[in-house]
Length: 364
Image (cartoon, rainbow, N blue to C red; front, side, top):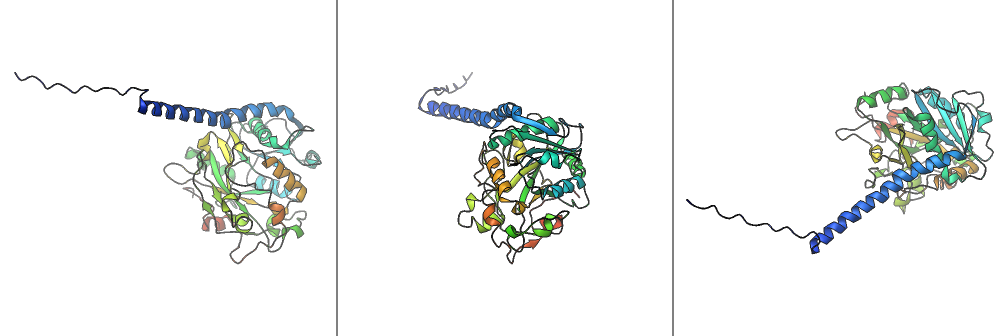
């Protein structure tokens, strides 16, 4: 009988040998880094949200959600009264059921302005409160009004546009998203401008901001590396072309996540550019493209006071996305000629689809 050959003896490497120490150190460093990021972007926003909720006063409208379903808009208000009626009317036409405003204007007169509109609620921070805490106040209002509902988070100079939104409603879009098991929509900010400096323009009663600022840049956009939180950083547009031509990495990020099926543990941590949980920052599904949207921004029609209030609210962001402020440079743009030969006039959502800024996904 032939004996079996002896099996080689494997000697385990000591965990604290030279290689083991390096491995353990890397694991510990990774764990600590992940814990710090989770605390900074996950726990602290929630704690600050609950704390800063006590600094808000209810000034008008329903103090809580009037329904458990439907679409709700949560928006800051900086004093740009001229564009507000168009903002409300545009989104009512898209099927928004309720509006919640955080009044950050100097005079605080929004509640009186919206007194006759029962679908609008107004809150205002108490005297002396830091406007840099606006992100926490807005998260608190979303938790109060939007939990369990689809929430549209916009700036007051933004108009939400999606594929064929001229004839479709947001309800149609979210019904399709739910069939795909999606609970958020990625969007790109499209900065609008006119054929002459915006500082000399004004918006009359009943006029659309598109009558004054009908043009946008159809080209010149690019996507930088994916951020640390699954977010996609997109830059371009008129600010990048005119003010940041030499330093494009400092131009404002145009990426947003404006439409979300809101859960109690959700939070924005950098304007509406970055969210937790971080899976909400991904633009598309794993296996195919998903519908996206655009935000037509008419901030060039805002006055210097409202732009200053917007910049102050934007200045305090928990997690920077390596992009500059969206509002700080707009006062300079208001006094410049922005139209060029390549500028495109906006007529319908198909204009944005054709130049690649808007993706209908699998929705027909």
